Image 1 (cartoon, helix red, strand yellow):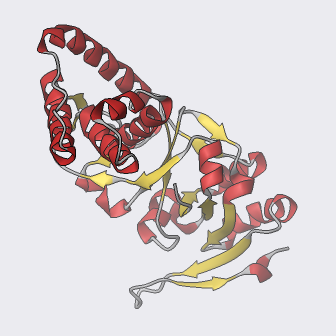
Image 2 (cartoon, one colour; image 1 turned 45 degrees about the horizontal axis):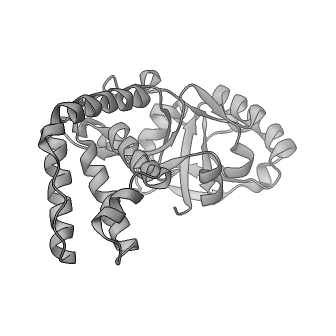
Length: 278
């Protein structure tokens, strides 16, 4: 897990509340503006087993072992378990916490959509591995696709299992299967599934180039702003005048950056604005 810097555009009123409370809000999918958030179908049991069987056969060939074949007599029982796990995962995704972030602070559309047309502010946030691990957070880009959303959990199992095989080159397939039942493996696989399932949107939204911070639970204010806020970006002084006293009092280490957009320039220009502190 690596550190990451991202940006949060907010209106003036929301900014004041965040700075007062020292929180970043994790919304649930049904609170976001895309009605298709975290909605997907799950793959069939046969589709799941097709990937796991192919993965085990692939590793068996590489290691000169006999592949571990799934006992087809146990298929009805496994299908029931798989369906139950799919249901649990869909329920988890519906309640997951999502904080929508941006890649840069000079995105004119983001200022228009979420920064009150330039009268809000943009928070620059630096997430360290320690902070993400302590709060069970996952950061990653949104994928934009117009394909049908059918989630096969075995795809995430395969990726995680192949990583496990690389980490244990001398282990047998039976050893790897045993390790894959342990908590660290299941946690890594679960994070992958959650990110893929809740970070896919239609290409109509691609211009936002969104980054998502995922947490275990939605509708949750996360008290980490003091640890991650490094700079406040602004265009006009309306929001700045409201948040400046809070910055001076609670966030003395945070710097300011003012942006101006010119109709004759393709790129915005930023300038340090610490002199605007009062």
